[in-house]
Image (cartoon, rainbow, N blue to C red; front, side, top):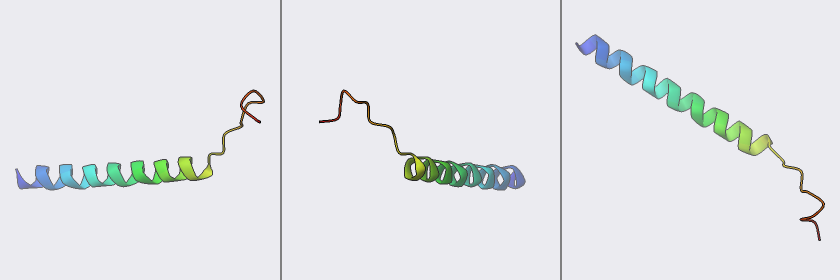
Length: 40
């Protein structure tokens, strides 16, 4: 039982860390093109 809890907690932390890295990379490296209609 304890082994399952350890496995679940480590996998959850790994998934959260990867999600944070992916979100940081996508928002930091993403520069959207501004459409000509929105430019003033």
